[in-house]
Amino acid sequence: MTLPDCAALGTMHGKAAAIAPPLARIGITLVVPIGLDTDRFGTFTPEIPRAGTMEEAARAKAHAAIAATGLSCGMASEGAYGAHPFIHFLPIGREVLLWYNSETGQKVVERLTDNTPCYDNATVCSGDEVTAFLKRIDFPQTAVIVAATGDGAPTLAKGLQDRAAVDEAVARAAHLSVQGSAFLQTDMRAHLNARRMETIGRLAERLAARLATACPACCAPGCPARAYALRVPCEHGCGGRDGPDADRCLGQHLSLLPDGDHAGPLRRLVPRPGMGPDRPAREDPGRLVRHRSRRERRQVRHPDAEGAAGL
Image 1 (cartoon, helix red, strand yellow):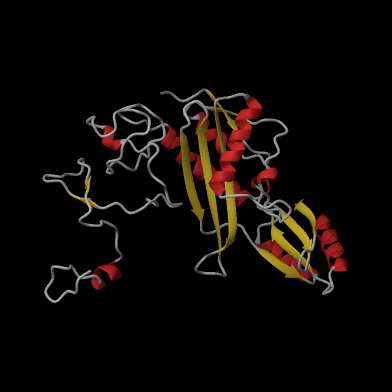
Image 2: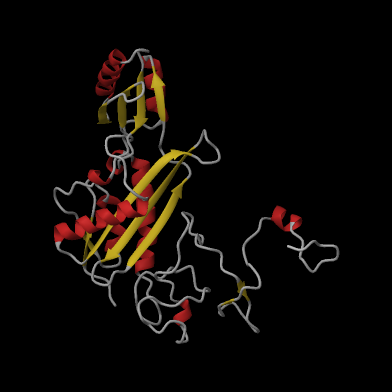
């Protein structure tokens, strides 16, 4: 199974600038359909809520790109930005990049978390407050969205990269607001947010590395280069665990956290006799192998230790 020469990219926001170079290095030319409306799958502003998960939205964009170009393979990305789930005054961003082969049904997904995204918002009442916000977000490399304040207030302008246009939109928003204020936020569309485009580029590098790594047994692309120890059957019909290298085939079997860690159910593994660095572990219900912090290791006692309570 080989990679195609061309693949469709579902975007209307210039993401090819970040995604195309890593794909070109592995011999894939991206084709962006003209006139493809990916905003129908969800927008960052409230006009069109995203239906489903980030991966489902990315898959819908990839399918739309395939349908528009007639190519067999497509790809697309989806992002979500907001407050950090644990440190609420800090922002966080999550990106998903998906590759889909319509002929084989193969799907390869990479995820990445940006802990320092260019994502911010503020309610402003004066020109000085507007200036402070624009400086904070690295304007005009990051564009601005202006809306009136209050529940259900309309978005007045998007993609603003000119200070005069920002001031005009802020004045209109203040006129519509009972408080005389305006709501500013960063425009998170990739072509208007340099930091997000950079994050998508890093994600594309990771996906390209995966696509360039084939299963040793069946040659299916998409095997994570950093993983080799889980014994999982290959979905591409290479004989599952029977071949000498089949249990290294991970092309479709790992769900990855944004930082690349295993995000699926924790597997129970025990070492084989004589297991070395190049010998995979086997599944067993006896023990649960996972990384623990130093503090956790101090707190958790082995059940065989003297006086230890049953776990």
